[in-house]
Every structure is written in structure tokens, then in C-alpha cells.
Length: 477
Image 1 (cartoon, rainbow, N blue to C red):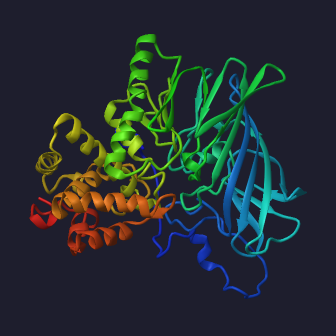
Image 2: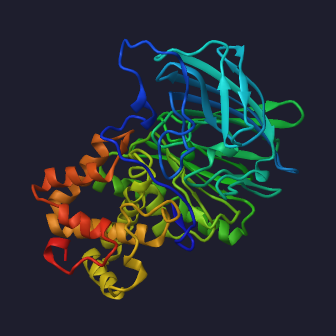
Image 3: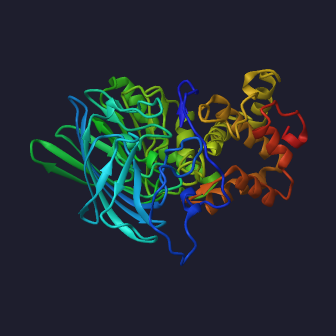
């Protein structure tokens, strides 16, 4: 994610555990132990967002069927969820905001409750679930997403012409029930029905466009790789589309037809640079981690761009560096997601660093010189240094220092360990954790392993102290 301006009030972080398994699994009973089924926890264990995600379940697939009405912003839908119980469960939760009118588990009506916590949909199946059991859950719902909020966030972005579901760290609960945390990635299959004359763009590949009664049309998009729920998206409206294949990788980009013709041409030219940018990123980071790529420029005014998996979304004033940033997120944030939101610099700092690396390669802007100049620009007492970006707190995960000092940290590491070791660290990080999660501690361990150096002092200076790092060789100067 990158903001315009680059400071968003947002939200949250995560407890680091020694594995990349969902936090809720930590309390599972030992194999073979007998115990009474219990309710799954209301959260996955992230202290920054106590109600994000849910305990006792592992979602494998979402099949989302939503219909959207532009006049009054009404959304009606049914989401089919295949999930596995990770403990014996008497009930389980899903994260969702819209009013629900029906829930079934394996075809049998289930008791459900949204009264205690609006963000939590509590589902009690007819029969308790056993650890390891896989079930199919169907949730039917209807409402106006713009009426609902969570933790002060009102994330529905729409007008009478266009809608785009884009935000971070929360977006899914406004349009489909989910286990809303990066620790639980799942396959996503999205069908959106809109009035005829409108189009829908979403993650992955378009597999069908079907006419429906009452002058409606249903678009089905399927992503072939699991994703964190907040990275799922759809945009509906009228779009100019461009598509192709480069080096065997299909790409599709879209620009809103609500933009002025001259702006639309300019935005399309920028969007069509996507496959070339992806190709360059592959030379630095290794193979692109997904089967599709692309992007979409909206006429709405979100104030930021977002790294939706396979197809980032942008505002009309997006520049080239932002496109580089969001495409770099496909490796850092999408393929390798944070284990917890406190490690957000692993997403934003890394994507911001790739902006600097791209400018160095294409515009001759020396990244080490940029590091030195930025360090000089902010004296010791400047607030820029006060936020410990390795654990910035729930209100500061999108603060400017997380982006800029995060990218400075990587450039300093590059200078400290050398060019060959540095790029080996990044390529190994994304290759070894492809499709999974990572923590700051794991990244430091990898950097030390590859470089053969003790980097405790380095990472403490850049990520932990909340002070300006000393201008020393040990700190990458």
C-alpha cells in the first residue's frame, strides 16, 4: 500500500510466534487427547487487531457470489466457504459486517449471531466439528456496505457510477465473510453481478461473463493462488481494457472511462508499463509469484494505491514509482505476507526500497547517496526518527517513517553486507516463503545466515530504538 499523501491513520500489528501457522492453532489439544468441543476464539491472536481472524478454523476456499446495485449501493450475496477445523469446535466465528439472513454448514441450517460484536459472525453448527474435519459453510447476506464501519474505518469506496473494494488492513468484511488475517490465505473465486452495461474487474483471470435476467450480467474471476482476504477485490463500472502476454505471463490492465479522455490515455500508457516493470523486478527478485498480473486505475479518490493480489488498484494521480511499489508488493506482502501486522515494514519498507532500486537502475539515482542525503535531512531530534518502525503500534502502521526508514534500512543493509549477499538475501526470502508468511526476526536470521555477519546491532539501530542510527559503517554508511 502507498498513500497520497504517504501518511494514513490505520492500524495494527501482530504477535510473533516461532512458526508461521495460524496463531489460533497454538492452543490446539495434543494429538489423541479427548476434550469437549469449545467455541473458536473471536480473533486469531493479533494484539493490534484482537478481533481480526478467528480461532479454530483454516479456510481453504471462498466462492463469492455478490450482486451490486449502483443506485442505492445495495449489495446482496452468498459466500460459500470450505474450511477445516483445527480444533474440536462447538462454534466458530467469521469476520463480517453486513446483515446475515441464512447460514448452513454442510447443507444443514446453523444458528448464527451478530448481536454481540457486529464484526463477528458467530456460527453454531447442528453438530460440533472435530479437529481436522472439513465442512462447507454457506452465508447469505444483504445490506448497504457504506453504512457500516469497523474500528473507525468506513472503507466502502463507491459512487453512482463506480465501486472499488480496496483498503488495508481491512476490506473483506464489507463484502464477504472471511477469516480476515494474513495468516489464513485461501483460494478466492469471485462472481459479481451488475447491471448490463457495467463491467467487473477482479483478481486473477476472467473465466466467464454470463447474461442474467432483468438486464444483468455476472462476471466470474478466479485467482489460482491463495491470498490474504484483504487482497481480494473487485471493481465495477465502465473501463477501458488492455491485455496481452509477456514472457508467458498474461496481463490485463483497466482504466475508468469516467476519467477525461486525455487523463485516460495517460493512465493507460502508465498501466501498460506493468509487464515491463514486472520483468525488471524478476531480474532482481526471481520469478513473479502468480499466474496473472495487471492493474486498474479508478476514477474514485481513495487517496492511496493498493497491492491487490495480481491486480493493484491506483488513483488517477498515480506516478511510475507507485506502480513499481505496488508491483513489488506482489513479492513482499502478497506472496510473502506478514506473520503479524507489527512487521508491516516487511511489506512497505521493502516495496519502497524497490522504488529506489528501480530509480537507480533506470534514472541513475544512486540509492546510497539517497540514503546519506535522507539521513542528513533529519536531525536527531526530528520526529522522523522517534517511531520504532519494527513495532510502530496500531495507529502507525502506515506512517511515513515505516515506508521511508524501512527502505533506508534495506539500502543500509545492502551497503553493509555487499551487493551479492544483499540480493541473495531478498531472493531467498521470497523463494523460501513463497505463498506463506514471515517475521522480522526470521528476516534478520536469514540476513545473518547469508552474510555471515552478526546484525543484531544493525537491526536494533534501524528498527527498534526510535533514535537516529549513528553514522557508522556498522549501520550501513
